[in-house]
Figure 1 (cartoon, helix red, strand yellow):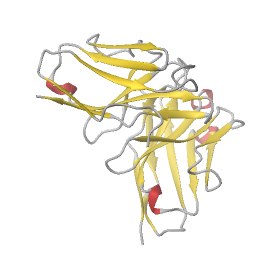
Figure 2 (figure 1 turned 90 degrees about the vertical axis):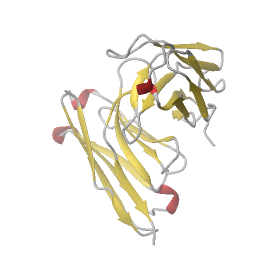
Figure 3 (figure 1 turned 120 degrees about the horizontal axis):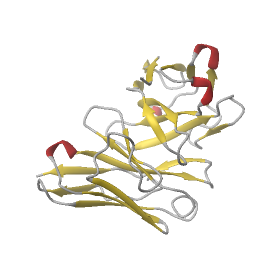
Figure 4 (figure 1 turned 45 degrees about the vertical axis):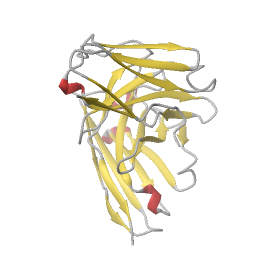
Length: 120
Length: 110
């Protein structure tokens, strides 16, 4: 069965950095586009970034452009999010999600999420 | 402020039919299909409906979706207590080159 397991969240000071990881299993990771989507406490979903199956196509939300970097290692079936210059407003649960091959903009599997707290 | 607009709350009694609306623009719903996600309390979102009106395997046919122009809606018939959750619509947006979501609708089963 498809599994996505995020890790790497925690408490970090404003201006600091953190690297999130997502370990994928149960499907051919290298065949799928992947994304990071976040949810601030008590708030809605916010799309963060998207990477193609080969890593050649990458998009970011304006709110994180220039500060966050998405990457993947198909050999390790893992997705990453390097987060630099963190701000209080980046505080959220970060979900790793698989972009479905059916439809447009469809996320068919989500991880359980990892909490990132940016606070002094 | 979310790009897609949803009512913040909805409610109904067991057995009733409720609908949740989602409004967008020509760059998102007007050009692409709409997807819906259900988030039960304390859990990750789960895909509920995709390509406007298709249900993933395992989703009861009590759930249905539709889209017209730049708006979409999710209908739940025969409301059950386990349907109490937050519901989000989402769609690709070609002006942002990313997926946009609604602010979410909290469904309460009275």
